[in-house]
Image 1 (cartoon, rainbow, N blue to C red):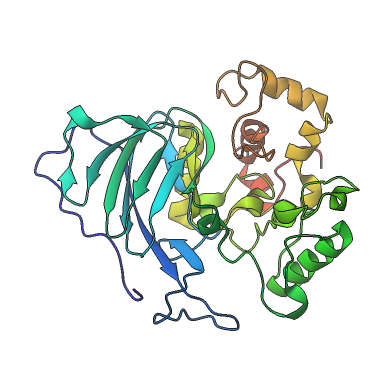
Image 2: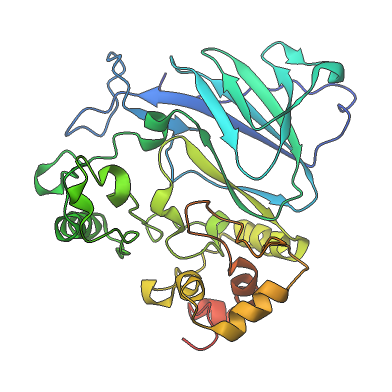
Length: 331
C-alpha cells in the first residue's frame, strides 16, 4: 500500500467526553525492502521493514504533549501483521475502534493494545508523567526491522562479535551515513565466553544528527541509539518547555546536537558533577527523579533522562547559548 495513505476522520457534532487536548493519528504499515534496493517491492510478502506513518524510528516524529493534558492516539493497521502497541510511563483506555466510539462502561486500564489486520484502535490517557516515553509495537522483530546493513563490510553481525570489530563496523556506518558515532553501552571483556553472546549488545547506534528536527529539540545526546522500527516517543513536557518546543516547530528551528563528549547524562550517572546532580535530585517541580532516588525518564535501559530537567533549564535560558550549540554551562 504505497502512495498517499492517511486517516479520514468524521468528528461528531458534539465532542466526546472527556474532551482531549491532543489528537494524533498513526498508520501501521510494513514493507519488503530487498538488499540493494531503496524502493519497496509491493509484490513481495516477506515483510522486513515496519513503520509508523511510513517511516521507522528514530526518523519518526515524537508526539509532543503538554504535562497534564488528555491525549488521544488513533492507530490504523494497513499491514498484514498484528501489532501489540505498548506505551511506557502511562496507563490508557481503549476508547474506540474502526466501528466508532466505544461506550465508556467497557473502558478499562491498559498499557498495551492489540491492533489487528485492518483494525483501528483509539487510546486515550492523561499525560501526567513528565519525560520522554517510548511507544512501540511489542513484537521484537517489528522493533528491530532488519537491524543489519547488507552491503559488504557494513554487515553487522549479531553474535560472537568482539568489541573492536563492532566499533569498527559502527564507525563505518557512521562515516557512510554522516553522523558522529557514540560508543555503545559497555560490555564485559570476556563476554564472548558465553556462547552466542553478545547478540544485540551492539545494536545501540545513535544518529541524532541525521534525524534532527524541531520535535527532537532538548532530547539527551544519543537518545536515538535504541530507537528503531515501529517506535516513537511521547514527549510529556511542562508548560514552559512545551511552549518552547511548539514555538520551535512553528519557526522550523532545529537546535544544534551537542557533541558526544558533552554527554551530561553519562557524567551524572558516573558520579561526576555532584553539584548539578544534587540540585537535580532535590528538584521536586518536575518529578523526574522517583521518591526512592531511582532515575526515570527517557529509557528504562540506562539512557535515563536524569538530567533532562537540568539540561532543558539551560537549553531554554538564552537564544545565544542555543545558537552557539552549548547546552551545558561549563563545557
